[in-house]
Image (cartoon, rainbow, N blue to C red; front, side, top):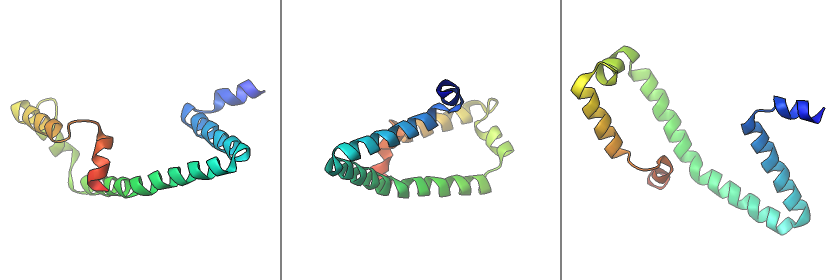
Length: 106
């Protein structure tokens, strides 16, 4: 029965549940360490939340003001040199891992 339940759970949900169980185990074994871990999690969440909200707002605004057909003409498969140039400039501007931009926006 346990195997059938585990097969139905998606990997991301399994990871979330396993992490929660691990936090509970640590909290019951060493409550001080458990509270310190929770404080760290909430600190990270509080620091990254404004970035996620900003990105969400930018995504909504982009969806509202940009139209798919015009985007395909600008940077699609048949955009030619202009599309290639825009892609290269965009890659240069956003070089490196995206999480490194968090301090810029936070």
